[in-house]
Length: 245
Image (tube, rainbow, N blue to C red; front, side, top):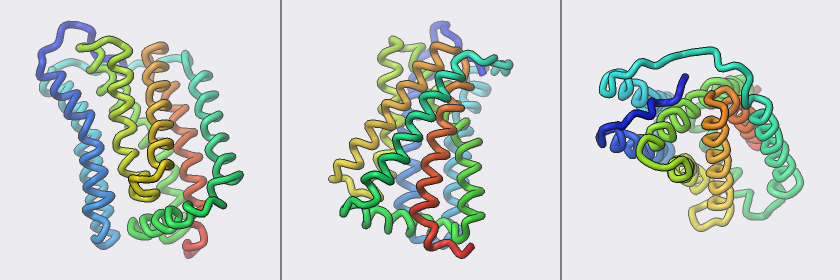
């Protein structure tokens, strides 16, 4: 995908970008907090429904409201090596931090229990199911998030603000819904929630910068993929005792 056009844009497009900035936080609040008491099948339906709304909005807006054409072109390899190096470094740091310190930390036990409860709530009662979700998130969801956050939110904000402002604002929005996820596990008064969310924001800023530099989502996607793969590998380590097989 190419970046949104640099031509002067009507203010309605800014409102759309700001709506997209807060929508994932609203969606996370719905399926992580409001739907948690529903049966696993219904939780899955809620999750699928709100994700369709989230990822469908940018494309619907660009095609139906802005009436712009979306051009798909092979992006080449620019930015891929740098993206993969960043993703690998972050993934290694996460795994190292977990095994060297976090899993033995006294305040991590309640967070691990909350993670296992959420895994169970989504009906992920086997290693196969969890692995399937991990593959989907790493390969597909990471690409959808890059299309949503970098191509649409960051790209649209650049039409109304400087590069630095668009990068900072989009990265804060990217981190915001992770605050809800982390707060669910660690508590909103916990330093882990805010430090880890800040790290997410830094990652989002790097991916926005790389997208701007390379003109392609391929590098950010590859980087995001590796980070998500590490997250789900650690999720498996935390939840494997409760898997049936």
